[in-house]
Length: 216
Image (cartoon, rainbow, N blue to C red; front, top):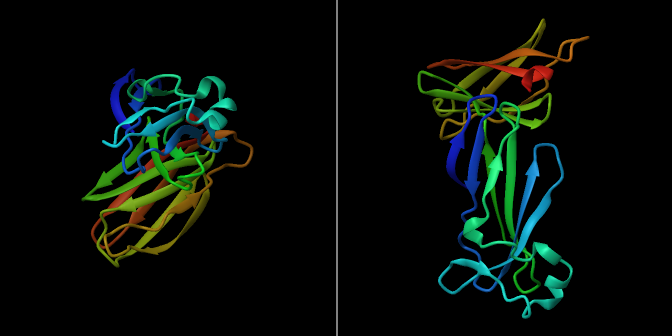
């Protein structure tokens, strides 16, 4: 997805994006779908094909009559270049997932994916980065780290109220940490603030983030 522009300030940020795809076989019939975090995938447009030059154009409805018959107005509702999407009204770190995929029997199984996070949650310290993704709203987060020394032992601690969980990860060969799934919460409360901290031999990064009702 290519970002076209942004409007508004947090928490009302809106991101305008448009799909950009390549590598699909010529003549393959494509569909375009969107899936919110924790939600169901919805196909919003189809009936596009890749021409011999690699451009995405409207497919010949008559040539694909069997496919088009069951799709109604979803068959090439607008030019691919005009298929813009607005990502907004999301929680901090909440992703919107997109997929372009083939639907004709002659070209099965081709897919391309993209994710847009309108309100990213990220902390950077001493060259190390810690970033959250709200994969299961409103509580379930995945924490990812990068920029650490390869093979370094990295201690992590996740804290919500008096609750603390932690352990040790080992950075991979390029300095990425394994994803950590965290579900913050405090008994009797519907929302609040939490922290996730990682400490290595070269850096300490702390990310503060909201959960539950506080993340709206």
